[in-house]
Image 1: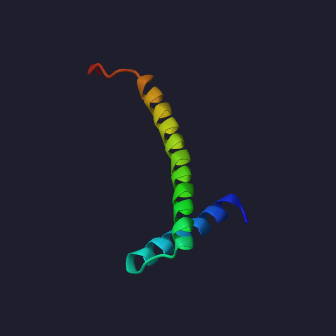
Image 2: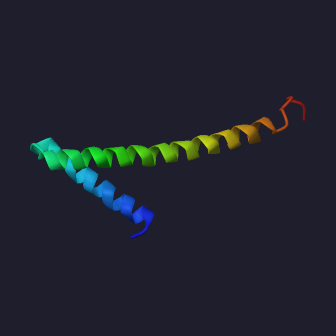
Image 3: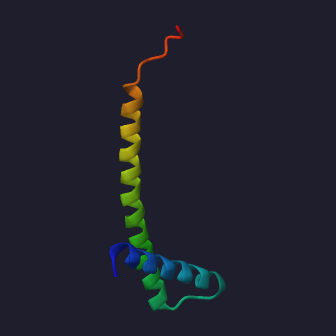
Length: 73
């Protein structure tokens, strides 16, 4: 199982536990599992946030290098 497949499986399980929690009480084992999966999700999102912020910085630099529009044509 690849890294993205593992994450997809973990995220599906996380969502299933969240849904179950909305209608009934989770067991202690399920609560612990959900917390672990929430921590993994946070890590995944943090990596993605860093990627998006780096992309935003590159776009800002590209815009800053564009010639200014003086309004003369």
